[in-house]
Amino acid sequence: MLETTVTKEKVQEEAERLYGLFKDRIPDMTLETCRFYAPWVSEINRLKKQQNAVILAHTYVQPLVLFGVADFVGDSLFLSKKAVETSAATIVFAGVRFMAETAKILNPNKTVLLPSIEAGCSLADSITPADVRALRREHPGAWVVSYVNTSVEVKAESDVCCTSANMLQVVEAVPTDDVIFIPDKFMAENLRPLTKKTVHSWDGTCVVHENFGQEQIRGVRESYPDIRVLVHPEAPAGVTRLADFVGSTEAMLNYAKQSQDRRFMFVTECGLSDRARVELPEKEFFGSCLLCPYMKKNHLESIYRVMVEPARDQVIEIEEETRSRAYRAVDNMFKLTVKR
Image (cartoon, rainbow, N blue to C red; front, side, top):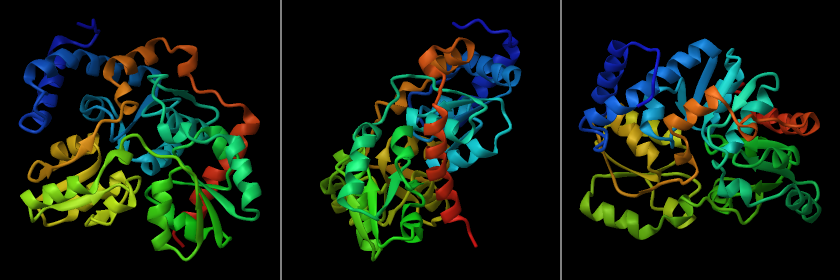
């Protein structure tokens, strides 16, 4: 059990709060489980105040992080905006490395901490700066649209970034008819029917979304004919064609919130279903999801440890020349998608 300076009464209050959220919604979150983790939650929240820190958490991380210690929860676009807006001196990014790098790109004078150095990304690992330069030579004049799931070095070689929430808006806004979209080949496939522009792609995939298949959706529809199937655009085109809605993590959750329907299937990482069961207890969530091995590296202990004594690799540092070039690509995303 973690020793904490927070009173026993406050810790018990925290345990009851968490159990109230999770009861009958997330099966393994028993009262005993909440009591065990409540000291960690209480101590992290104390450290946040002491250090003037903010915790940004992606929807795919564990529920105890989302509902216990996170100040802001959402997808990459939402968290990118919060990284810009925050006045905190320290940003603890409960997500994966490219997300923490993006926060540092936008906040060069703030301390940005990554709870786990093992929290990588198969998409970010699939492409290098040299690959981007080779694509430019192959398609001269085309703008490079870099999905946010890329390293800072790849962003520095790009013209503009995008997220799953604004990918079409960005592609439509760039000034060229040819676009190099990197690194997700499935997102590129899903983009092509939506735009008249020529979309050149790379061969990267997400280890979670590449494993979804059409038979999973068909099986759930047979059991629940009234279900609404919501699919992330990182999934293969054959899967997205069977969806009632295709969108980012936050867009899928908003669809479920606003819909009059009661049953939903999220074809994405399991964290979204966990979050939805807590936030929308009156609705049901079925079907297919897979765990992201990288996102699940974020847990309460890793967040506590990085706040108390961060290792060198957990403190995000970016060489200024690379950061400024990457900043241009991220800033172009905001400029091209601003509502006029």
